[in-house]
Length: 73
Image (cartoon, rainbow, N blue to C red; front, top):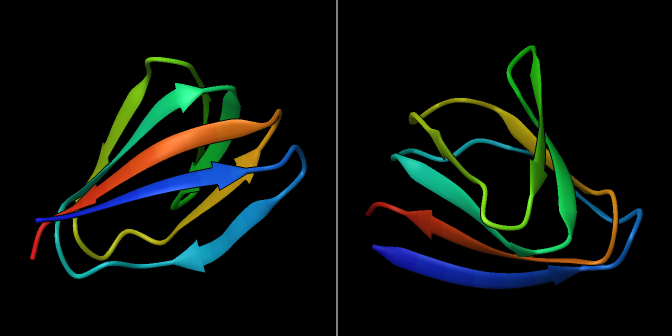
């Protein structure tokens, strides 16, 4: 398992990415918008989104935000 703690300024984004294993995005503070495939998920503090392997996703910071990415290995 790989854990990545990330902080994003308002308006920043993590460009489209795809991972080879299951992953989750846990919002620790702030607000995000996550596009996974054709769907967009608004996320606030405490929300967790789980994605299957191979799902393209983009993360956008609506406000200053911190998030924990958890990926299987």
